[in-house]
Image 1 (tube, protein in one colour):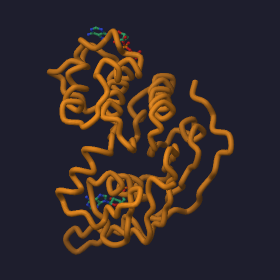
Image 2 (cartoon, protein in one colour; image 1 turned 90 degrees about the vertical axis):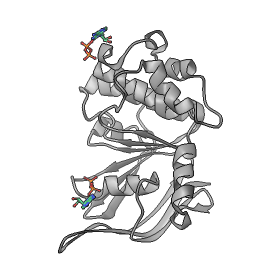
Image 3 (cartoon, protein in one colour; image 1 turned 90 degrees about the horizontal axis):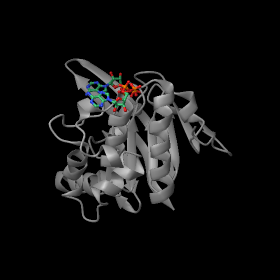
Length: 229
Ligand code: ADP
Ligand code: ADP
């Protein structure tokens, strides 16, 4: 039972005279409920692939399926609907709205979702139930990122896409953010795809895809993923 399957995915960026081949023929199969890490040097195509999986960008060629639906056949409206209904994003910088409380930031998403969690429930899942009335500036970096996780999981997405989610945090704070992702993964069965340079995070994944020059160079399988903490 696959969350995603893709074949022959290529992405070429044309800037003036210069062509950049960000993806050069990527085939992938991601089982439903998997925790997958994308690892590799800067510029190797990880974010490009994550953005295509999340419906933020389109490949130049190749096919990508979500469950049994071909995303690469979607028009813009269908892609937007897919993104809103199925995808939770977490970025390196928390992207919270500073003038809204933690709960109001989560409510932005739950107000437009089909079957959302209660915002308080989502904040409890990340251990911030008592901080729901606080503004981002009153929260530490790790706490802000946990609010971002709450916001991403509150619509019960089919997939959580995380681009360097702990990149701005020290390692123990990063581990706590990871614990909240792991809890969402365990309690909701969400497929989680994480770009990271952090080897501790890679050790928690079911599989690690190593990228090099726009291709998957190697896939490592962790028989016994490490528990966070
Ligand atoms: P990674 O996430 O592994 O660091 P990216 O997917 O961000 O790699 O980038 C892959 C390649 O595509 C890089 O050479 C990058 O400069 C290029 N690239 C990414 N986005 C764009 C864009 N919007 N326009 C032009 N080139 C881009
Ligand atoms: P960290 O060690 O995670 O970087 P900080 O030292 O920034 O955390 O903050 C420690 C605690 O103080 C956190 O629980 C944070 O929420 C709280 N805190 C930080 N700044 C404020 C503030 N302006 N108002 C209320 N609480 C704050």
